Image 1 (tube, rainbow, N blue to C red):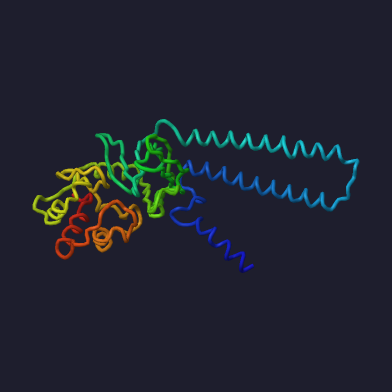
Image 2: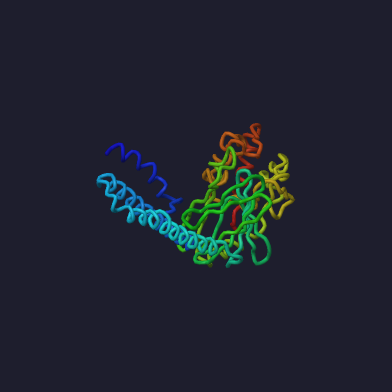
Length: 321
């Protein structure tokens, strides 16, 4: 009994927390979960029937008079019924796939899987709103995700809200998510994509519609940066603007995550570390120790007052008036 418990605990570990796919918080997740339970119960019933038939046949003495019934049992139990069941499940699955991959929604979000982080672009009322490694959604509204990848195949998945979808370089796939519970749900890459695959995550924050509209408007605004900010001077002197964009400044790098409102994000490193001064300082100076194979180069020589000024400047890039 103890050994069975030890084997069960790791399996149940995936059924709790922000990535709990068995406690759905979205309309699409409800449908996928319903299909799962039907498949699980059906598999248990079929397994029980097959094992029961095998035990019955093993214990029953051979009776040549039952050959005709045995033949019909094989035809119906081994061919007809499985074919009907598999076809019904296939049709049901295709209907679900059709419904979770629509052509339009209340909101359009484009997500590009990079190595190893997420570029997120909202179709806002006044144009594109670009952010990174965090997704915010309005409650009870359908968000249409247009997904692609920059380098290799990734897989976009918010287990508690909906199904997963591959992100393929050179091709756009779509996925609908309709959250029906507020909260912060975990998202991740569900397909091995390279060295830092396990460190490629993101937060999915579900908000009331009015709060979401206010957040999107604040996210669309340019950063408020004082020209004489010492941290911004370090940012420019170290060449950070070659890779990163801060809207409202001359930093327009297209390579790395948009940092316009990076201080408003709860996590850094693509959803791995809390956004704290210590973590941010270490991320800048010892990047590859925190996230192996990340494209961002570390700056080990940056220290003291200059590092503190840069960290303070980045954390100030939030939505404050």
